[in-house]
Length: 333
Image 1 (cartoon, rainbow, N blue to C red):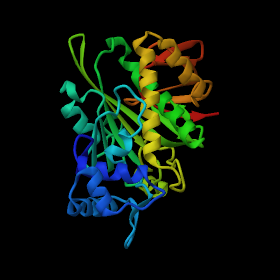
Image 2 (cartoon, rainbow, N blue to C red):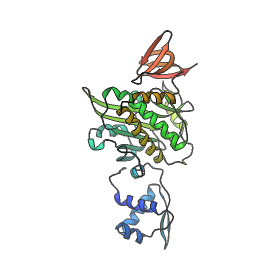
Image 3 (cartoon, rainbow, N blue to C red):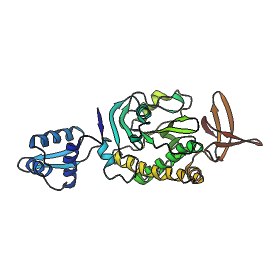
Image 4 (cartoon, rainbow, N blue to C red):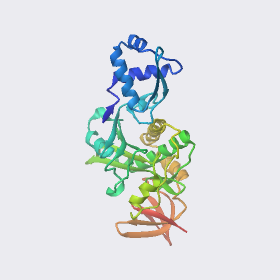
């Protein structure tokens, strides 16, 4: 099932009118007259709206009244009231998909899709770092964003850090939950992974052709089920869920995240890269820790003392300091 923010205009009109008059009942006749849609079409739209998880009360001789909105991340729930200039103005929604990142990568070269968001209720082949699978059941937020490729090429390594800052800020503002940032691209809660980020970029010569950001958030998931599938992975350090109860609409978090991301990317465009590394460091669980970095069979143990200007991790071991550009890290005393 696919919905986009460019389609379903009749359904959206009915829904918006119901939202605007939530304290009163609206008859099919009134809706038909105001929206210039037949009463049969109104009835069909109401039934479809209900099937998408909206709660609508219907009373004979009175009409329809919207009681509650859906928890689904439908396009119009994200675009409605969004404060961004570009990000999230077009949304592609799937109930089930192999990978939002695959779809985003395929359509990223179409300039009309810059700023578009591809979002799914669940993924069958979700993508994690280094070709790993990201377990993506219903209840999570699985999305990809197509960025306009106007970055200087040397800044591309800082995009995951800007994304992490934006997501951490959005989670705190929306839910009041403070997460930590684990190098290179995880968000953690109580020491366990709650979100992850990947970047796919197409680069030709010294020009960036396309950039897609993949974000997976364990919003309201069964963490134990996910853990049972990945606990044997080498880099496993636990999984948790962001919320235990669905008392916050996930669309609110997505909208705030896109707003924060646009601001963070603005820092990169304005050459304020030091602000990205400084903000990330303040939210980090990695800096100051004794760690072991494992990458392609090699291991380095030492103390994480900071980020380089490109986001590389600086590790001090003995009398030496080493820049780490990739790898999995574990903490120890």
